[in-house]
Image (cartoon, rainbow, N blue to C red; front, side, top):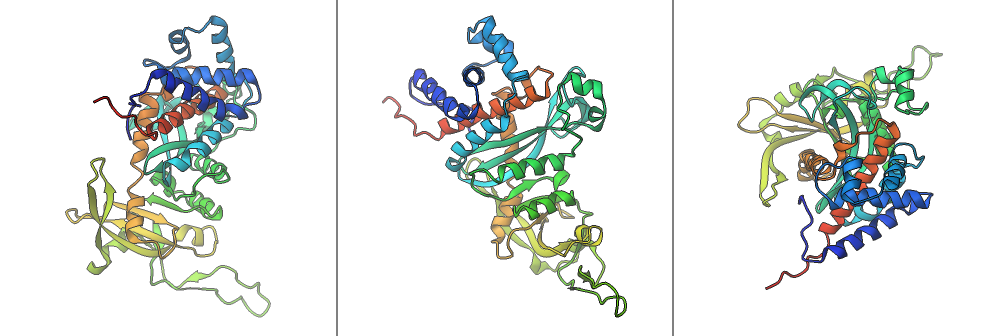
Length: 409
């Protein structure tokens, strides 16, 4: 993914296209002033370097104090739905990038104080440690020609949800309660699933894949997934037979959930007992230089234990994808997937290894477009900001896909 737009065209043409883009995608906002402010804010994110917080951005645009007050109110308090803007961007741009997957992840946003909604000392994968930060859950479309955010949700720790005074000060709506990160991700996937977008498997790391309810929710929504799981994850192996047990006596209630004929095992134990012929070397990733990277994989049909044993659900077969590089003493990664049983093995391997592209997305969203620069203390303001950053990102993605003008001889 390229870091900047580099076209041999006058800057005024790019600005005209930016105006047209924002006018189109913001047309769903109900008020003219909201649409005007959206254009000002996105222009500031796209056109100028430096810190993208509100005051320096509008200063660089040479806007008036009155405009500053208007945009500040537009961000923090105006009752527009950020999903309207994100959806419009997604439905315009997603078809252009050759979508192959949706990726679920979260990112930490470092904060100095304690008043921004959701901020606390908590673990952030972005930081790789515990730090004072907010955590935002997001879903992104990943394609052959680019990426595109499909939605954002700010994670609110339980201590925030239970503190009435802090909630009121941060303007957190009364109907927003505690939700885990997998629950927030499920909400975002369910929301985007009804938009006019190319359907694609959902990819996620262990923090989401280990959540049985998350996987079950995606399956019930008829959404495909390839999600990482821990080595300790328990499954019923491919030899397992499921059958309905007989009722307890002639008047007992008929049994409705099939039972296995053997005990479950961890995915690591299953991997270690597989014969040599179960393993195959396949290309699983293509580098930016166009070179294929290969590794050794096994693909086994299994049934996850938790939904059957603890949730009394009908057994549901999934792919267990195992990566065990030939030069390592143990398997390195495991994934569960509900893709069809005739899915090509190379496609499974590539999907399992595709999630890394989300890091490029976060890098651009933060480094170039100021995702982590919002300084307001409003819950709505945070989501308004992420929607407008998404708009700027979508415009730059579309610009990169335009045919480049011929360079002077």
